[in-house]
Image 1: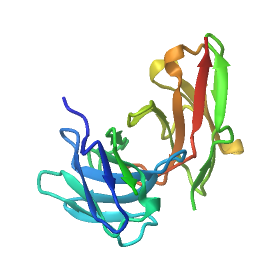
Image 2: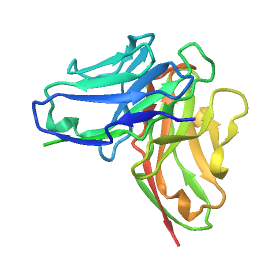
Image 3: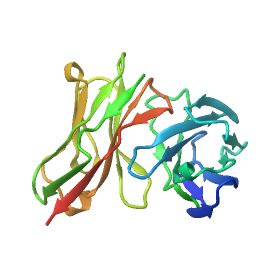
Image 4: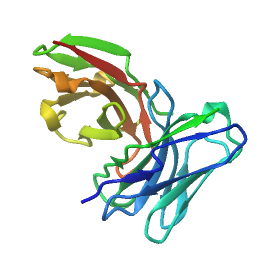
Amino acid sequence: DAGVTQSPTHLIKTRGQQVTLRCSPKSGHDTVSWYQQALGQGPQFIFQYYEEEERQRGNFPDRFSGHQFPNYSSELNVNALLLGDSALYLCASSPGIHSGANVLTFGAGSRLTVL
Amino acid sequence: AQSVTQPDIHITVSEGASLELRCNYSYGATPYLFWYVQSPGQGLQLLLKYFSGDTLVQGIKGFEAEFKRSQSSFNLRKPTVHWSDAAEYFCAVGKIQGAQKLVFGQGTRLTINP
């Protein structure tokens, strides 16, 4: 049973460019959230998607946007990249907002470097 | 606002020794607490969680943690560490059961001396 899969694994962009990161949730999970982990820091919550809608959002600018598809997979888009956007982007899935004992399953992440 | 503090950025212990990683949280209501481990190049793996009930929780890989409400702490322990335990450990707090928004601490990097 595949867990959470993310692509690409690594990518390099330049300032001002746009990037799209992709995530497939674990089988049976329908809720996806995204986290940003800067070097030497803990992950920070970006947003959560359920039923193709953004349900919660952390303290991130509008340059960060997302989407969830009918098959529950998700994309994270970042526009007008800044050097400070360099980080590991983690996707996490769970069985659903309304399920009990909700535990997140994390993917291995996408490492973004902005030059 | 919720917050998590892991006072120790880096800890070194000898293989076979005991381990305790500290975690303090700030949250007004009953917290939902987690410990995750991250190996280099890997995502986060859940070690254990506390939602309610017994304040001493057992996790995978021989880890345990104790919730102490009076001290706002949720320290992680292991009686005997192995070289394979070298990794980054993160404590996290969630607002409500089922919440996706976890607040993480800065992490504690664990090094094991042979």
